[in-house]
Image (cartoon, rainbow, N blue to C red; front, side, top):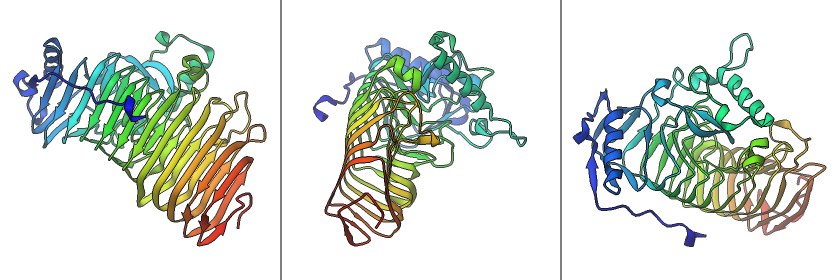
Length: 432
Protein backbone atom coordinates (compact mmCIF):
# COMPACT_ATOMS: atom_id res chain seq x y z
CA UNK A 1 0.00 0.00 0.00
CA UNK A 2 2.69 2.50 1.02
CA UNK A 3 4.63 1.75 -2.16
CA UNK A 4 2.05 3.90 -3.96
CA UNK A 5 2.26 6.81 -1.48
CA UNK A 6 5.10 9.25 -2.05
CA UNK A 7 5.52 12.74 -0.70
CA UNK A 8 5.57 15.45 -3.34
CA UNK A 9 8.85 17.25 -3.98
CA UNK A 10 9.14 20.98 -4.53
CA UNK A 11 11.73 23.18 -6.21
CA UNK A 12 14.26 24.90 -3.95
CA UNK A 13 12.54 28.24 -4.37
CA UNK A 14 10.72 30.31 -1.74
CA UNK A 15 8.67 33.47 -1.51
CA UNK A 16 7.43 35.12 1.68
CA UNK A 17 3.95 36.58 1.91
CA UNK A 18 5.11 39.67 3.80
CA UNK A 19 7.06 40.66 0.67
CA UNK A 20 3.70 40.94 -1.05
CA UNK A 21 2.11 43.20 1.55
CA UNK A 22 0.80 40.72 4.09
CA UNK A 23 0.82 42.00 7.67
CA UNK A 24 0.45 39.62 10.60
CA UNK A 25 -1.48 41.99 12.83
CA UNK A 26 -4.79 40.08 12.90
CA UNK A 27 -6.41 43.09 11.25
CA UNK A 28 -5.07 43.58 7.72
CA UNK A 29 -6.79 41.60 4.96
CA UNK A 30 -3.98 39.50 3.50
CA UNK A 31 -6.01 37.65 0.85
CA UNK A 32 -4.51 39.51 -2.12
CA UNK A 33 -0.97 39.12 -0.78
CA UNK A 34 -1.36 35.38 -0.32
CA UNK A 35 -2.80 34.94 -3.79
CA UNK A 36 -0.06 37.02 -5.39
CA UNK A 37 2.67 35.07 -3.60
CA UNK A 38 1.16 31.74 -4.69
CA UNK A 39 0.76 32.93 -8.27
CA UNK A 40 4.35 34.21 -8.54
CA UNK A 41 5.79 31.08 -6.94
CA UNK A 42 3.85 28.86 -9.35
CA UNK A 43 4.93 30.98 -12.32
CA UNK A 44 8.55 30.39 -11.30
CA UNK A 45 8.01 26.63 -11.44
CA UNK A 46 6.77 26.12 -7.91
CA UNK A 47 8.31 25.99 -4.45
CA UNK A 48 7.49 27.17 -0.95
CA UNK A 49 5.21 30.05 -0.01
CA UNK A 50 6.31 31.04 3.49
CA UNK A 51 3.94 32.37 6.14
CA UNK A 52 6.15 33.87 8.88
CA UNK A 53 5.11 34.37 12.53
CA UNK A 54 2.02 36.54 12.95
CA UNK A 55 -1.74 36.29 12.53
CA UNK A 56 -2.85 36.84 8.95
CA UNK A 57 -6.50 37.47 8.17
CA UNK A 58 -7.58 36.05 4.84
CA UNK A 59 -10.37 34.81 2.64
CA UNK A 60 -10.24 31.74 0.39
CA UNK A 61 -6.78 30.46 -0.56
CA UNK A 62 -6.44 28.44 -3.78
CA UNK A 63 -3.25 26.42 -4.29
CA UNK A 64 -1.60 25.89 -7.67
CA UNK A 65 0.66 23.15 -9.01
CA UNK A 66 3.89 22.45 -7.11
CA UNK A 67 3.08 24.82 -4.24
CA UNK A 68 3.91 24.15 -0.60
CA UNK A 69 2.16 26.63 1.67
CA UNK A 70 4.46 26.56 4.69
CA UNK A 71 3.41 28.02 8.05
CA UNK A 72 6.34 28.75 10.31
CA UNK A 73 6.12 28.36 14.08
CA UNK A 74 3.99 31.20 15.45
CA UNK A 75 2.13 31.72 12.15
CA UNK A 76 -1.67 31.66 12.02
CA UNK A 77 -3.95 31.89 9.02
CA UNK A 78 -7.12 33.40 10.49
CA UNK A 79 -9.98 32.97 8.05
CA UNK A 80 -12.69 35.53 7.49
CA UNK A 81 -16.09 34.93 9.06
CA UNK A 82 -17.76 36.70 6.12
CA UNK A 83 -19.21 34.16 3.64
CA UNK A 84 -18.59 36.64 0.80
CA UNK A 85 -14.85 35.99 1.27
CA UNK A 86 -15.43 32.52 -0.25
CA UNK A 87 -17.02 33.64 -3.49
CA UNK A 88 -17.18 33.04 -6.39
CA UNK A 89 -18.52 29.52 -6.02
CA UNK A 90 -16.37 26.52 -6.95
CA UNK A 91 -16.93 22.88 -7.86
CA UNK A 92 -17.13 20.99 -4.60
CA UNK A 93 -18.81 18.15 -2.71
CA UNK A 94 -21.15 18.62 0.21
CA UNK A 95 -21.77 15.43 2.19
CA UNK A 96 -21.05 13.26 -0.83
CA UNK A 97 -23.04 15.31 -3.39
CA UNK A 98 -21.45 17.52 -6.03
CA UNK A 99 -22.47 21.15 -6.40
CA UNK A 100 -21.24 24.70 -6.90
CA UNK A 101 -20.83 26.30 -3.50
CA UNK A 102 -18.73 28.59 -1.36
CA UNK A 103 -15.05 27.84 -1.80
CA UNK A 104 -13.44 25.75 0.91
CA UNK A 105 -11.13 27.93 2.97
CA UNK A 106 -8.04 26.29 1.45
CA UNK A 107 -8.85 24.73 -1.92
CA UNK A 108 -7.25 23.17 -4.96
CA UNK A 109 -8.89 21.64 -8.02
CA UNK A 110 -7.12 19.42 -10.54
CA UNK A 111 -3.67 20.23 -9.17
CA UNK A 112 -0.56 18.09 -8.83
CA UNK A 113 2.08 18.42 -6.13
CA UNK A 114 0.50 20.54 -3.38
CA UNK A 115 1.21 20.80 0.33
CA UNK A 116 0.36 22.49 3.61
CA UNK A 117 3.32 22.17 5.97
CA UNK A 118 4.95 23.70 9.02
CA UNK A 119 3.99 24.06 12.65
CA UNK A 120 1.59 26.99 12.37
CA UNK A 121 -2.19 27.16 12.84
CA UNK A 122 -5.03 27.16 10.33
CA UNK A 123 -7.97 28.76 12.15
CA UNK A 124 -11.39 28.59 10.51
CA UNK A 125 -12.92 30.76 13.25
CA UNK A 126 -16.16 28.88 13.24
CA UNK A 127 -18.29 29.61 16.29
CA UNK A 128 -21.88 29.75 17.50
CA UNK A 129 -22.60 32.97 15.58
CA UNK A 130 -20.51 32.31 12.45
CA UNK A 131 -21.05 29.23 10.25
CA UNK A 132 -22.20 26.88 13.01
CA UNK A 133 -25.40 28.85 13.55
CA UNK A 134 -26.53 27.78 10.06
CA UNK A 135 -27.32 24.35 11.51
CA UNK A 136 -29.79 25.65 14.11
CA UNK A 137 -33.51 25.32 13.50
CA UNK A 138 -36.10 27.81 14.64
CA UNK A 139 -37.80 27.72 18.02
CA UNK A 140 -41.04 27.06 16.16
CA UNK A 141 -39.63 23.79 14.87
CA UNK A 142 -38.75 25.13 11.43
CA UNK A 143 -35.72 23.51 9.77
CA UNK A 144 -32.28 25.06 9.94
CA UNK A 145 -31.12 27.20 6.99
CA UNK A 146 -28.56 24.51 6.13
CA UNK A 147 -31.22 21.79 6.19
CA UNK A 148 -33.27 23.73 3.63
CA UNK A 149 -30.25 24.04 1.31
CA UNK A 150 -29.19 20.43 1.86
CA UNK A 151 -32.68 19.15 1.04
CA UNK A 152 -32.57 21.16 -2.18
CA UNK A 153 -29.19 19.69 -3.11
CA UNK A 154 -30.38 16.18 -2.36
CA UNK A 155 -33.49 16.67 -4.50
CA UNK A 156 -31.43 17.99 -7.41
CA UNK A 157 -29.01 15.08 -7.11
CA UNK A 158 -31.86 12.54 -7.12
CA UNK A 159 -33.41 14.27 -10.15
CA UNK A 160 -30.11 14.23 -12.04
CA UNK A 161 -29.83 18.02 -12.33
CA UNK A 162 -26.42 18.82 -13.91
CA UNK A 163 -23.80 19.84 -11.37
CA UNK A 164 -23.24 23.16 -13.14
CA UNK A 165 -26.85 24.04 -12.35
CA UNK A 166 -26.67 23.10 -8.65
CA UNK A 167 -25.54 26.57 -7.61
CA UNK A 168 -25.49 27.55 -3.96
CA UNK A 169 -23.24 30.14 -2.32
CA UNK A 170 -24.78 33.55 -1.63
CA UNK A 171 -28.36 33.31 -0.44
CA UNK A 172 -27.91 29.67 0.57
CA UNK A 173 -26.49 28.00 3.63
CA UNK A 174 -24.16 25.09 2.86
CA UNK A 175 -21.05 25.48 5.00
CA UNK A 176 -17.69 25.07 3.24
CA UNK A 177 -15.01 22.65 4.37
CA UNK A 178 -11.78 23.98 5.85
CA UNK A 179 -9.34 22.20 3.51
CA UNK A 180 -10.56 20.51 0.35
CA UNK A 181 -8.28 19.27 -2.40
CA UNK A 182 -10.44 18.09 -5.31
CA UNK A 183 -9.20 15.77 -8.05
CA UNK A 184 -5.56 16.33 -7.09
CA UNK A 185 -2.49 14.10 -7.12
CA UNK A 186 0.52 14.04 -4.82
CA UNK A 187 -0.86 15.79 -1.75
CA UNK A 188 0.87 16.45 1.59
CA UNK A 189 -0.57 17.98 4.77
CA UNK A 190 2.00 17.90 7.54
CA UNK A 191 2.63 19.39 10.97
CA UNK A 192 -0.04 22.07 11.04
CA UNK A 193 -2.79 22.55 13.60
CA UNK A 194 -6.28 22.88 12.17
CA UNK A 195 -9.01 24.33 14.35
CA UNK A 196 -12.65 25.43 14.36
CA UNK A 197 -13.64 24.65 10.81
CA UNK A 198 -17.02 25.74 9.45
CA UNK A 199 -17.64 22.05 8.72
CA UNK A 200 -15.33 19.12 7.85
CA UNK A 201 -11.69 19.98 8.53
CA UNK A 202 -9.61 18.02 5.99
CA UNK A 203 -11.43 16.68 2.94
CA UNK A 204 -9.47 15.24 0.01
CA UNK A 205 -11.87 14.27 -2.80
CA UNK A 206 -11.03 12.13 -5.85
CA UNK A 207 -7.35 12.46 -4.94
CA UNK A 208 -4.51 10.00 -5.42
CA UNK A 209 -1.35 9.74 -3.33
CA UNK A 210 -2.27 11.62 -0.15
CA UNK A 211 -0.20 11.94 3.04
CA UNK A 212 -1.56 13.52 6.23
CA UNK A 213 1.20 13.44 8.84
CA UNK A 214 1.73 14.98 12.27
CA UNK A 215 -1.42 17.09 12.02
CA UNK A 216 -3.48 18.20 15.03
CA UNK A 217 -7.19 18.78 14.52
CA UNK A 218 -8.62 20.81 17.40
CA UNK A 219 -12.27 21.33 16.53
CA UNK A 220 -14.42 19.73 19.24
CA UNK A 221 -17.27 22.22 19.46
CA UNK A 222 -18.51 22.60 15.90
CA UNK A 223 -21.28 20.53 14.29
CA UNK A 224 -20.02 18.05 11.68
CA UNK A 225 -16.44 19.05 12.44
CA UNK A 226 -14.99 15.75 11.19
CA UNK A 227 -11.21 15.54 11.37
CA UNK A 228 -10.06 13.95 8.08
CA UNK A 229 -12.47 12.55 5.48
CA UNK A 230 -10.79 11.04 2.41
CA UNK A 231 -13.57 10.63 -0.16
CA UNK A 232 -13.23 8.57 -3.33
CA UNK A 233 -9.46 8.68 -2.85
CA UNK A 234 -6.76 6.09 -3.54
CA UNK A 235 -3.48 5.50 -1.71
CA UNK A 236 -3.87 7.50 1.48
CA UNK A 237 -1.51 7.52 4.47
CA UNK A 238 -2.69 9.16 7.72
CA UNK A 239 -0.01 8.95 10.40
CA UNK A 240 0.95 10.44 13.77
CA UNK A 241 -2.08 12.74 13.93
CA UNK A 242 -4.18 13.87 16.90
CA UNK A 243 -7.93 14.38 16.57
CA UNK A 244 -10.25 16.22 18.94
CA UNK A 245 -13.41 16.71 16.92
CA UNK A 246 -17.10 17.47 17.02
CA UNK A 247 -17.87 14.44 14.86
CA UNK A 248 -15.89 11.53 13.39
CA UNK A 249 -12.11 11.74 13.75
CA UNK A 250 -11.36 9.93 10.47
CA UNK A 251 -14.11 8.91 8.03
CA UNK A 252 -13.57 7.22 4.68
CA UNK A 253 -16.28 8.08 2.18
CA UNK A 254 -17.23 7.50 -1.48
CA UNK A 255 -20.20 9.65 -2.47
CA UNK A 256 -23.84 9.55 -1.53
CA UNK A 257 -26.95 7.92 -2.98
CA UNK A 258 -27.83 8.86 -6.59
CA UNK A 259 -24.87 11.21 -6.92
CA UNK A 260 -22.52 8.55 -5.60
CA UNK A 261 -23.83 6.12 -8.21
CA UNK A 262 -23.42 8.73 -10.94
CA UNK A 263 -19.77 9.48 -10.08
CA UNK A 264 -19.10 5.86 -9.04
CA UNK A 265 -15.52 6.20 -7.75
CA UNK A 266 -14.48 4.09 -4.75
CA UNK A 267 -12.21 4.93 -1.85
CA UNK A 268 -9.47 2.35 -1.46
CA UNK A 269 -5.98 1.52 -0.24
CA UNK A 270 -5.53 3.58 2.92
CA UNK A 271 -3.34 3.17 6.00
CA UNK A 272 -4.05 4.88 9.34
CA UNK A 273 -1.33 4.42 11.95
CA UNK A 274 0.04 5.87 15.18
CA UNK A 275 -2.85 8.31 15.61
CA UNK A 276 -4.62 9.56 18.72
CA UNK A 277 -8.37 10.08 18.83
CA UNK A 278 -9.40 12.13 21.86
CA UNK A 279 -13.05 12.96 21.32
CA UNK A 280 -15.76 12.64 18.69
CA UNK A 281 -18.54 10.44 17.39
CA UNK A 282 -16.19 7.82 15.95
CA UNK A 283 -12.46 7.11 15.96
CA UNK A 284 -11.95 5.44 12.56
CA UNK A 285 -15.17 5.40 10.57
CA UNK A 286 -16.37 4.30 7.15
CA UNK A 287 -19.53 5.91 5.76
CA UNK A 288 -22.20 6.76 5.80
CA UNK A 289 -21.57 8.35 2.38
CA UNK A 290 -20.00 5.23 0.82
CA UNK A 291 -22.06 4.58 -2.31
CA UNK A 292 -19.02 4.22 -4.58
CA UNK A 293 -17.58 1.57 -2.27
CA UNK A 294 -14.74 1.46 0.28
CA UNK A 295 -12.08 -1.27 0.44
CA UNK A 296 -8.58 -2.14 1.56
CA UNK A 297 -8.42 -0.02 4.70
CA UNK A 298 -5.91 -0.79 7.48
CA UNK A 299 -5.83 1.04 10.82
CA UNK A 300 -3.12 0.06 13.30
CA UNK A 301 -1.29 1.21 16.41
CA UNK A 302 -3.83 3.87 17.36
CA UNK A 303 -4.92 5.09 20.79
CA UNK A 304 -8.49 6.21 21.33
CA UNK A 305 -9.28 7.78 24.69
CA UNK A 306 -9.65 10.91 26.83
CA UNK A 307 -12.18 12.13 27.36
CA UNK A 308 -14.48 9.85 25.34
CA UNK A 309 -15.49 8.65 21.90
CA UNK A 310 -19.04 7.54 21.20
CA UNK A 311 -17.66 4.61 19.19
CA UNK A 312 -14.09 3.65 18.46
CA UNK A 313 -14.49 1.74 15.18
CA UNK A 314 -17.62 2.40 13.17
CA UNK A 315 -18.98 1.30 9.80
CA UNK A 316 -22.31 2.90 8.93
CA UNK A 317 -24.61 2.67 5.96
CA UNK A 318 -28.22 1.97 4.96
CA UNK A 319 -30.25 0.65 2.02
CA UNK A 320 -30.34 4.06 0.33
CA UNK A 321 -26.56 4.11 -0.06
CA UNK A 322 -25.73 0.88 -1.91
CA UNK A 323 -22.02 0.27 -2.51
CA UNK A 324 -19.78 -1.97 -0.46
CA UNK A 325 -17.33 -2.02 2.44
CA UNK A 326 -14.79 -4.84 2.36
CA UNK A 327 -11.24 -5.81 3.31
CA UNK A 328 -11.04 -3.65 6.41
CA UNK A 329 -8.58 -4.49 9.20
CA UNK A 330 -8.23 -2.83 12.61
CA UNK A 331 -5.20 -4.05 14.54
CA UNK A 332 -3.39 -3.11 17.74
CA UNK A 333 -5.92 -0.48 18.73
CA UNK A 334 -6.09 0.66 22.36
CA UNK A 335 -9.46 2.09 23.39
CA UNK A 336 -10.34 3.76 26.67
CA UNK A 337 -13.97 4.57 27.43
CA UNK A 338 -16.65 4.62 24.74
CA UNK A 339 -20.12 6.05 25.09
CA UNK A 340 -21.77 3.31 23.05
CA UNK A 341 -19.83 0.46 21.38
CA UNK A 342 -16.18 -0.30 20.75
CA UNK A 343 -17.08 -1.71 17.32
CA UNK A 344 -20.25 -0.78 15.47
CA UNK A 345 -21.33 -2.01 12.07
CA UNK A 346 -24.80 -0.59 11.48
CA UNK A 347 -26.64 -1.03 8.19
CA UNK A 348 -29.66 0.92 9.44
CA UNK A 349 -27.95 4.31 9.75
CA UNK A 350 -30.42 7.09 10.56
CA UNK A 351 -32.97 4.31 11.26
CA UNK A 352 -33.32 3.47 7.55
CA UNK A 353 -33.53 -0.30 7.10
CA UNK A 354 -35.33 -0.65 3.75
CA UNK A 355 -34.58 0.65 0.27
CA UNK A 356 -33.47 -0.28 -3.23
CA UNK A 357 -29.70 -0.32 -2.69
CA UNK A 358 -28.63 -2.65 0.09
CA UNK A 359 -24.95 -2.20 0.94
CA UNK A 360 -22.60 -5.18 0.85
CA UNK A 361 -20.46 -5.23 4.01
CA UNK A 362 -18.10 -8.18 4.50
CA UNK A 363 -14.52 -9.06 5.28
CA UNK A 364 -14.02 -7.01 8.47
CA UNK A 365 -11.27 -7.99 10.94
CA UNK A 366 -10.20 -6.87 14.41
CA UNK A 367 -6.88 -8.05 15.84
CA UNK A 368 -5.58 -7.16 19.30
CA UNK A 369 -8.15 -4.48 20.01
CA UNK A 370 -8.53 -3.69 23.71
CA UNK A 371 -11.00 -1.45 25.51
CA UNK A 372 -11.31 -0.22 29.10
CA UNK A 373 -15.04 0.41 29.45
CA UNK A 374 -18.32 1.10 27.72
CA UNK A 375 -21.85 -0.24 27.26
CA UNK A 376 -21.17 -2.63 24.35
CA UNK A 377 -18.16 -4.58 23.10
CA UNK A 378 -19.70 -4.71 19.64
CA UNK A 379 -22.95 -3.69 18.00
CA UNK A 380 -23.53 -5.46 14.69
CA UNK A 381 -26.82 -4.63 12.99
CA UNK A 382 -27.35 -6.08 9.52
CA UNK A 383 -30.51 -6.18 7.41
CA UNK A 384 -32.86 -9.08 6.81
CA UNK A 385 -32.23 -8.66 3.08
CA UNK A 386 -28.45 -8.30 3.39
CA UNK A 387 -26.69 -9.49 6.52
CA UNK A 388 -23.22 -8.40 7.55
CA UNK A 389 -20.85 -11.20 6.50
CA UNK A 390 -17.49 -12.56 7.59
CA UNK A 391 -16.46 -10.61 10.67
CA UNK A 392 -13.39 -11.84 12.56
CA UNK A 393 -12.31 -10.80 16.05
CA UNK A 394 -8.98 -12.25 17.17
CA UNK A 395 -7.14 -11.71 20.48
CA UNK A 396 -9.40 -8.86 21.58
CA UNK A 397 -10.14 -7.94 25.21
CA UNK A 398 -13.10 -5.78 26.18
CA UNK A 399 -13.20 -4.74 29.85
CA UNK A 400 -15.79 -2.80 31.85
CA UNK A 401 -18.56 -3.76 29.42
CA UNK A 402 -21.95 -3.01 30.95
CA UNK A 403 -24.42 -4.60 28.51
CA UNK A 404 -22.49 -7.24 26.56
CA UNK A 405 -22.87 -7.15 22.78
CA UNK A 406 -25.41 -7.17 19.94
CA UNK A 407 -25.27 -9.37 16.83
CA UNK A 408 -28.27 -9.15 14.51
CA UNK A 409 -28.34 -10.40 10.92
CA UNK A 410 -24.68 -11.39 10.87
CA UNK A 411 -23.32 -14.38 8.95
CA UNK A 412 -19.86 -15.71 9.68
CA UNK A 413 -18.97 -14.00 12.95
CA UNK A 414 -15.76 -15.68 14.12
CA UNK A 415 -14.19 -15.14 17.56
CA UNK A 416 -10.71 -16.37 18.50
CA UNK A 417 -9.18 -15.45 21.85
CA UNK A 418 -11.88 -12.86 22.62
CA UNK A 419 -12.75 -11.92 26.19
CA UNK A 420 -15.47 -9.69 27.60
CA UNK A 421 -14.95 -8.62 31.21
CA UNK A 422 -12.28 -11.29 31.51
CA UNK A 423 -14.52 -14.13 30.35
CA UNK A 424 -13.81 -16.00 27.09
CA UNK A 425 -16.46 -15.55 24.40
CA UNK A 426 -16.70 -18.07 21.59
CA UNK A 427 -20.23 -17.50 20.35
CA UNK A 428 -21.05 -13.89 19.61
CA UNK A 429 -24.63 -14.46 18.51
CA UNK A 430 -26.20 -13.74 21.89
CA UNK A 431 -25.21 -11.57 24.85
CA UNK A 432 -23.25 -13.24 27.63
